[in-house]
Amino acid sequence: MGYIMPIEYIVINLILAAAIGSTTVYIAYQQYNINRARLNYEAYDRRLKIYQSARELFNVVGQHGTVRYEDMRTFYSDTQEADFLIGTECREYINQLYKEGIKLAQLNKEMYLENGQPNPRLPSGEERNAIADAHDQLLTWFINEEEKLKIRFSPYLRIE
Image (cartoon, rainbow, N blue to C red; front, side, top):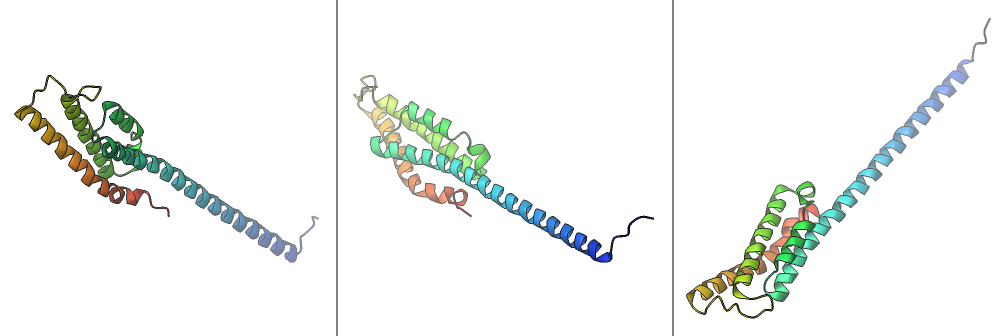
């Protein structure tokens, strides 16, 4: 006949198996929390770069009173990940910043040459005044929008 294990050994084995199983579940849960926190941090870091790129665009406009096409290409390139990292309303806002920045660059190019001198092909008068007024309106728009940037991005830059 075979050996029959006493009931005490069976109970101890069951208790040990339950303890090992519980510990394994606890460790797995902790690893899940750590990985989720790391993913949130990495997403935050990438979202912050998009926000900083928008801040930089506002800084350029504030310093120079306009933007160059090169500035807008940099902004466009730096914000490409926004489609995957932030909500559609923020992505639409970034698109709006890009479109308005391109308009500002175009108006500036019509008024001034590369060296900053007034464009001689655009004579003084109503046409130049209309372009200057449009440029000023866009510049005012950028100044007003700068205050709204933090509000628009704050839901995506909270650390939880």
